[in-house]
Image (tube, rainbow, N blue to C red; front, side):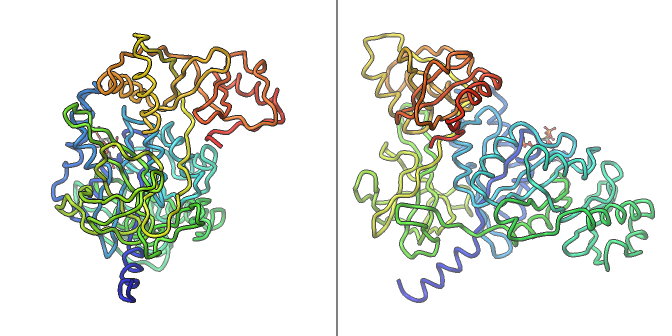
Length: 527
Ligand code: G4P
């Protein structure tokens, strides 16, 4: 690669930001995403993403959702340019299509924006998604949304972040009033006040100030609010955390922003600060050590496979995160697992600037590859020297069912279907140690529906699913395992690699097993 190209490569990597928005349903993810896309000019009309979401979620019927699959493919990754940055937002489905894919998608992000409803605080799905990000140690930025409504006090929310998620927060801005009394926000980094004006608060006035004690604030927002702001920020200065870039980078401290997505309050400053602080594409570990994004040869890995449910089109789309180098349409790469060269002929980009087919892409970008059934989750595609990226983590399922084929004569197709759908990451499969039963594990109910449907339509097998009362799965690492210790409200199974996994009906059973087996480790992800 020539000198010039190396420079281009560096610049392209430098300007990229690839992140996921994590939240509980209804916190405002669709609204925030849409506003960000509007800033970037990727869409022109507010309501576009919303309309997609509405058509996607107006129904709880899985087949209906599937009819919209084309839509969800294009909105799975959104790319746009803003202020010299190229931004990739990874969508993490939050409603009924919450699944293990959601977790895996997070492995393709370099940072996360955690969106929280000011009135509701930290909610269940946020906790799960946060934990996956925290395990990877990626930077997490927090946006407290819906400040135009009455909500909880900012201090209260900061305490909750620490108590529930174990992360301390450093407020980057601070609300002046709240709900109907919301006047604006104070930007602590830039020492400026953003005041909302007009009956519908649609105009925003920005005023530089000396500091939060500046008398201008009182003139702008009234004495009462100015005093309250000064008191609260003084308290933060004394008792709060200092901004520490290193801690943010390691995911130990979360920069905290307040705003209202629907009204654009605080969004511009959030986006600017976020783009400054969020990391550029990070290296990924492989059998050849860390692969840097500026490595000149192309490499990437598949983190998600989406099947086309239309029986007439059995094709699938494999989502590939580019880790290094430059992607060019038509290039040949090595499919490492199968040891073959393949041509990347018709890659798709998602909601890019009016383009469907990608010509070039760089580290941090996500491309969709047409998959005639040759990819598995975690596959590495590389140019030049051969190596494989670290395996993607297997996440702990939370819903379980015993599966059998209704017609025993179809055993061969049944086994083939289970094997392939496991590889694709549709379900996880376990076998009980005691009776050799097959137990499926998922994190979202929809995964079972997908499994059942695809077994019938692609493999011609009717399956019977019998829900089990387990709620937790833990991989066990121990010098010796005694199955008799896993009998009360629990059972011992093996995963597809032969690792021991204990399934528990409740937390009490899990704790008892942990107490009874002091030499064993109980892991939430496969070792
Ligand atoms: P989600 O993707 O996280 O599920 O949330 P979504 O953006 O769909 O937002 C959920 C609801 O919260 C929507 O109301 C949306 O308008 C509202 N919302 C989002 N941001 C704000 C905000 O800053 N302030 C206030 N007050 N509301 C906000 P909805 O009634 O469910 O839908 P709609 O009829 O308003 O479209």
